[in-house]
Image 1 (spheres, rainbow, N blue to C red):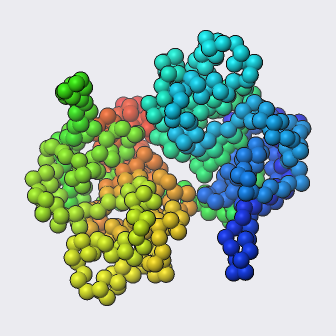
Image 2 (cartoon, one colour):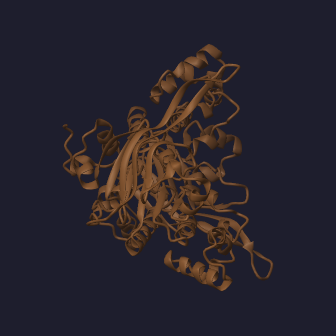
Image 3 (cartoon, rainbow, N blue to C red):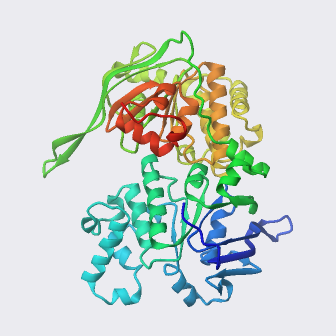
Length: 552
């Protein structure tokens, strides 16, 4: 954490209120929706303040208000909103443009949508320099741009300047966003969920980079996040937001040690447990793999000859027992999702893969059709995996119709209602569409769609990564209850090691298509053997407090 100077204030907000036009009322009038409700907070130079809350709590809207980046439909009111002694509400748009990117800058949550896809990185960086800098000429600008990329830790910065956003990894794009924000050495950096979409090791690198740059440049940082462990490591003070209000505020150590508000206690209580589940005695093997491979050809030249192979899954051997969960962890590109697709026969694989003694790679199309009822999947993003044209009732009924499980319409309706009951949703949702639900509700619908077929194996591909902490805890509890009730086997694919530890009986670590470590959850987390496993764990967890040895 940075050293904090308490005066003078960098900015001060008093009784900030933001509302948006709502839907029409029964009398034809448009009712406003209050996204932020009379909140007050302030920051000192060099300080890190975290705005913490779940989706819809108003934290991003509050931060955008400081830069007057709200849409025209928003109505903003505040008793006081000062930045560097200036009243923000009294400044013209031209004056605000000198503040944005100059004295205050913002790093947005999703760099792929914030970066222009048709311009190379150099042009986008150059746009953020001051007019005086831009007058120095292209060579001078390029030197400045290289220096910024070096500052943010990008390898081969001179080459990267000519790259387009899609040619960079997620971590590199986020570093470019940070470089753009630092172009004019701002006094305040607003970071909106800067690590949410990144792998755990990249998250740690970006967080370390931000705190290091903050210390070197002496800037303040407003951190907007729902990631409580990140707040604990990076922030000096924290404001907890719920339904547009700040319900608790204080120093980080004090708030984590003795939270006062029930909502804060709920958030902290939603962090996944460090206790792994107990093994199921005498459980039979439902899925086994031996030397499973999945290679993709690299083709070049006029005749598209194969010159090399991408070894996405390279010699994986594993077993999964009934009633147990095998966690598959690794960074993006490690092969964990491809492994799930091979098991589902959505990608062609080689080797030996047995499901309940049946060789999947030798199964005919008709045999796979029958087996797909017993092997179901829940994808990472339920919004894109649920058809927007079907009602919830039609989505849940679809699997029963395809597999001919309930010819009778009334029997199908009863089974659909039972599936909704199991995931904790009311029957009144049957006539609604996926866009009318929250992320957590949509994930429950996706689980119900899989569970209605009574599968033996459920493949879960990052099912909680896009969810808030409290919703994530609810989904994990639901999955545990369903596993216990039906003796389900889970293949749980994730890069969130805290969630994997809470749900998995065994963990398999993948790196560059290979399994580098495999063992019981407890032994792997307590005494990791492979250097890559130790790097993953040290990035995700505060291992020094859990007595994990770095030897071996």
